[in-house]
Amino acid sequence: MSRLDPKYRSTLAEVSMPETPLILLTLDHPGLPEPVRVVNNTEELTSNGKRYIAFPFNVTLPDDFENRLPRARIEISNVGRDIMYWLETSNGGAGSTATFDQVLPSDPDNIVYSVTMSLFNITADNMMISAELGYENLFAKAAVQMSYRPTNSPGLF
Image (tube, rainbow, N blue to C red; front, side, top):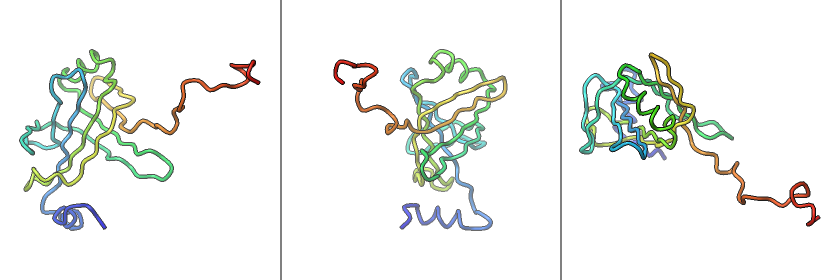
């Protein structure tokens, strides 16, 4: 059973969509006074009382491959130096999260898809800022800080 809104599902299923879903992007970091909110559109949008500024960006939404954590990718235009200044002062954006919300323009308060991911591997040049998004692999982390092995604790063996 699908959890998607029936109106949204029917819009996606049509050959000629009556309206294109919009992606709302919220970038958050402990060093920011308030999150950055942008919409991939030509005009700004208000959703659930929050204003999203029109700003061009490209996003590849999370994939769903077996035996692999979901990954996404985002590319933001580096037109104004504001984002670049934030990256330089925040240690490369360490600890940042990105939330993608998808809405229909006719009903911007109804979020039909939402995902929050951490930013990794942020790269920037004069024209574009790119980042990978994903989740930290908690299963690959050690459960304890030190494991007793013959190499580090020979007296026990």
